[in-house]
Length: 559
Image (cartoon, rainbow, N blue to C red):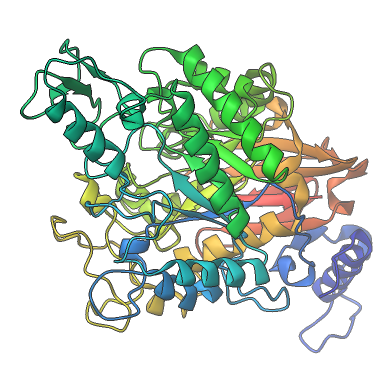
C-alpha cells in the first residue's frame, strides 16, 4: 500500500472543490460558484488504507495479555491450552503486513504457564516446566517459534515473590523442620530452609509449619510461602530459571508483585530488581522487563531507578484511573496534562524508561462495565484508543477489543474469550470453576467481525494507526493547552524530527475546534497529512476552513 502524502490530500481537496462546484452530471454550469467561493473541506474517509505499516523491532510494542486457561481449547476438555493459543495466533498477528484480518499486536504477555495447583497459576510448583493442563515444553517451544515467525515477542509471567506450598523446595524445607527436633537448622543439611522466611516468632502474615513450632511468612495466602530473596543460593537458582527461558526464546518477563519482594521496603525491592535486570540483560540485551507495583504513581515511579525497562502505569487504568475519569465526564484536558507529565515523572529515575500503559488486566473489572447509558459503546471505544495512543509498550487484556464484561471476584474477570455466543462452539473454554455467569454486553467476535462499526474493528484500526506511526509509541509529548479544554484534548508527539498531532474529542455532541493556528511538521493543517480518524459512530470527522468538526467521542490523527 502506498503512503499517503500531503500532495495526495491536496489533489483530494481540489477534486472535492471541483465536484462541489458541479451539477449532478459533473459539468460546471454558469450558475456554479467560483473556486474562491467554495468552502475548503476535507472529508477524511479511511485514509489508513493508503498508509504502510512502519513497525520497528524494539521494545516499544503492543502487547496482548493472554490467560491461556480461558483463551482457546484445542482438546475439548474445557480448559484453554498452548496448542489452542497457537491455532489463534493469526487472530493476534498473522505476520503478513499485506493482510488486514489480524489485530496487529506484536507482543504477547502470557499469564503464568508453569505447573501450579490453582487455576490462575500464580503459585508455582516447578519453574522449569509447563503446566500439564496447558501442554508440554514441546508445545511451548512451538509457540515461541510461531510467534517469532510472526514478529511477536513473548514475555512470561515470572513469580518470584513466592512459590506454591506444593513446590518441592518448600516441601523439603518443611519435612526437614519436622524431623529437626531440638537441633538448630543448617543450610548445609537443607539448603531450601534458607529459600523461605522461617522463624520461631509468629509475625504478621505468618503461618505454622504443621507439627513444629516453626512459622513461615506468606503475605498473600497460606499456600503461597514468600521467598527469601536475600538467599544467595536462591538467587543462583533464579539466575538459572531466567537463563533457561531466555535460552528457549522467551523475549522477557512480566514480574509479578515487585512491591512485595521485601514487604514494606521499597529500596530493597528496587535493589533486587536492579540485580535481576542485570543478569537478564547480560544474557539477552534486548529482553524486555516490566514490573507490577500496584501503588500510586509517586510510589511506583521510583522503581524505574532499578534499571528495568517498564513499570505498569496504574494511574491510567481501572475504573478510577485517568482514562475512565475523563471518558466519564472529567475535563478532557486532564488526560493531556497527565500524559505530558510522565516524561518528567519517570525520566528523573531512568532516562531510558519505557512507559507501560494498560487500561485493564486480570485483576480489574473489565472496562465495558465502566460506562452506562446510550453512549456506553462510544465511551468503551475511545477509552481503548486513549490507552493505545500512549507512549511506551501498551498492553491490551484479551477480550477488551470485544467489550467483554466481568467484575467482582477474580474468576469473573478471567471469563472465556468470547469467540462465539454459542458456549459449545469449537474452542470455547468453560472458564474458572467458581466463575459466576457473566452476561456479555456486546456481541461475540463472530458478529463483530462483520460489523464495520464494532468495538473489535475500532480496536483493530487503532492498533493499525499505532503501527503506521512510530511517533505514537516513541514520541516526546507536548500538551497543546490552547487547543484543549473540557471536551477537547490535543497532544503533539515528536520522534526523530517528525511531528504527529492527536486530537481527542470527548464531548457528547458534535463540536468544532478552531485549528487555524495549528501547524504540524511546519505546515498548516489543511496541508498536513491526515493519518487517520477514529469515529465511534457513523458520523465522520471533517476538516474545513481551519476548523475540525468532530462527532462525539472521536479522534483525529495528523502528521
